Length: 148
Image 1: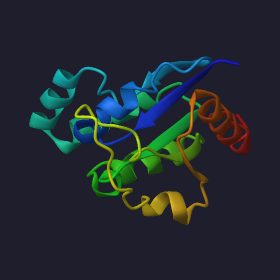
Image 2: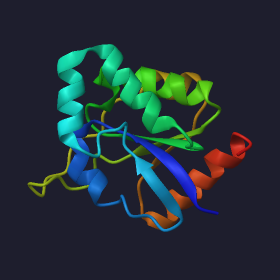
Image 3: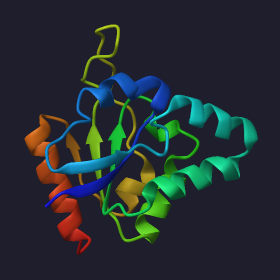
Image 4: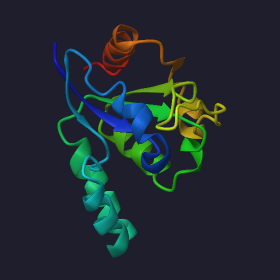
């Protein structure tokens, strides 16, 4: 079954890491908080927090699972808690995937950052990214846990 998945991550720091794993078989519309086009993100950021929240809400439409990619600075992102809360409110399955060990555009790995508290507080599972197949399985597990 193809799934529409919302990818939550630290755009500036981890976009290269995410692009390494973005084309997963059976996953469609990997919405990235509306930030697939960086210029849209920059424009919304100039307007207001409400504009960014609207972009997030729109990106979450018709998704069944939210994957929170956890890098070095993910837990410090301004909108991470909003994305997780909105995902929960919509009934999405949620899973955390650690990605700091993947190489950056400069070929460097990072130290693993803190897991966002809302993931831990709500008992969502956290895994280390291994490969596309394992990620697809984790997405399906999260969907099943949410009844989707």
